[in-house]
Image 1 (cartoon, rainbow, N blue to C red):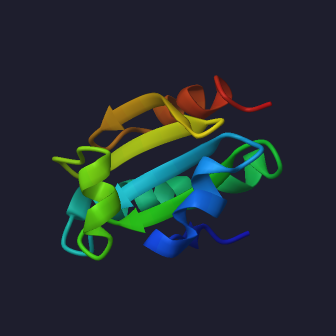
Image 2 (image 1 turned 60 degrees about the vertical axis):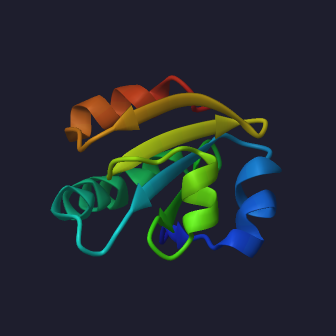
Length: 107
């Protein structure tokens, strides 16, 4: 499965109204750590199929949403459950740390 790149007009449907937890990767094309975490997300995303949805949001292109969630550094990972933020992590992380983070919210 491919991680969906969400845009502003899809935000409510894909993230806020999701029936399962959503991991949102706030990133930008110029951000080297974003590319590193992006590869890790692609490696683990399939493990959570149907349990946690993975999406990416380009913070440069979708500034309204990035501002709404006070994204000040990239990469930033936010996990939403029932439309609410349940966890926010700033900066790249190892595959092991990411798995521990997502495991907490997988149904």
